[in-house]
Image (cartoon, rainbow, N blue to C red; front, side, top):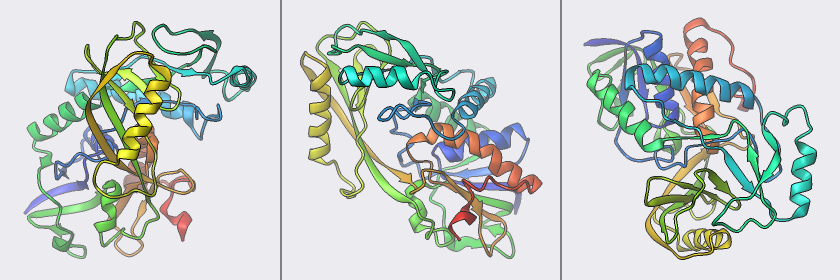
Length: 344
């Protein structure tokens, strides 16, 4: 039997940011990954402190942005790369009323650090009312982040590439197969519905599609453009455009209606032809109150869940991994807003 402090189940943002925290705290662990690309690994990687439909912000936005930068800097110490792409989001205004609303909201104390008061025209896309830039917004290099971090975990013997078998968990003996564990943290996204310990947590799947396209005329400006969806360069040839939100069409195949929605959205802002090179989708685990679900099993006190990150997986996964660690190791109460107990 091998003794470990933690077993982590999952390989999305929640799992990897919690794994980083364990590395920093010098805890022993094994991370079980099936190798399937979930919502995190096909996400846009948008880091955004503003809700761009209403020009509002959200709970702990500034704290989450600040902590993410700190964590990414720490993580670079062993992956030798910082995955932060410092390109602001530019929101295309639909009309003059939206410009005026942005100006009004930018004077609010909780938004003045995020909403740039200077409007910017962007060449090569349709933006007759110009764009507003979101200060402190950025992107994560999603592909490199997961590829490099999982490679590091494997090289350091933290990673086990196999499906986790719930039937092999002996909670009283605190064993799983050939491991003695102190704690298991389940970070499975929508796969939690297969988990007998936490299958009843109230996460709802939200299906999101995106397309990778080749633009006939590449954009001059290297920023993230947002109107209905996000558009940004992936490399010298391909651009990301997405993603959609759908709580109804939940089958595990591409929805033609979602692809049509993306084609129409991109055509609305890009005046030239483009070619779709790839279509991807994933199921975001969302919660009604838009807060993560973090907590301990009611009966098995060494089993924990970290889920419900939704569309803010990077910020939520990074920031609340610290709260979960403090809760487990030092019995520091979780914020009521994210605690599993709020549903009891």
